[in-house]
Amino acid sequence: MTGRKKWATVANVASSLLVVVTTGVESGVNRLRVVRIAANAPGVRLTPASAPFVPEIPHAAVELERVAIAESDILPGDGYDEYLKPFRTVEDVHVHAALVAYLLGVARRHRFAQSTIEQLLVLAIATRTLAQLDPKAATTHLALAGVLATVPRVVGDVEREWSAAPDDEWTRWQRDRALLGVASSARTARRERAWSTLGA
Image 1 (cartoon, rainbow, N blue to C red):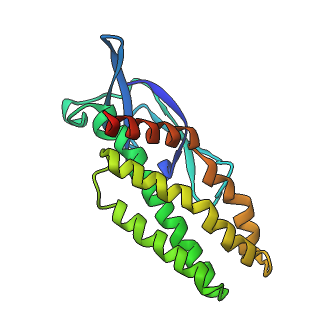
Image 2: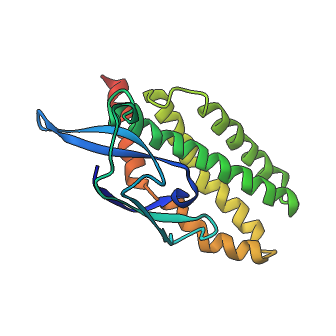
Image 3: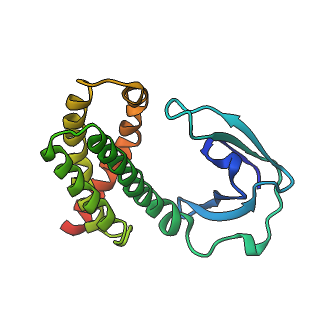
């Protein structure tokens, strides 16, 4: 296996890597599989890389040069349908669950309005519930879209109160809040596919 990824979150502290690879084109469709490899396997090179936000979380560029693959290293099933597509949903749910939990902590420490804390609690319960649902289901995707549409409004309420009492944490938040806009086009496409599936 040979390939390169510009940056992968926490790859430089992982013991193994899950890599989505192409096995070629079949009937006009790029066929994908997922392969598990040891991070220290011959042919694997990890180079520390920086992300544009949250620099406290390490990243690395991953280069693979003729890495030997055993049959047992290849995960069963289609790489896109079974792993890559559901992962994006799982990632969105858990990243936003962490975001809401963090902001809930900020709101409690700064004694923000009870109404703001209540809105964060609703989102916390919603993301916890979404984490227990089928990440492939169209209804899960639509419920997640509803949660993600609500997040900016609640974040705005938190920011209005937080900016009145700025601190070092507020400065870091301003630095990292761009993370909220990552993959917005993919989320829109997922929402549209979900509505199309239910409509059919």
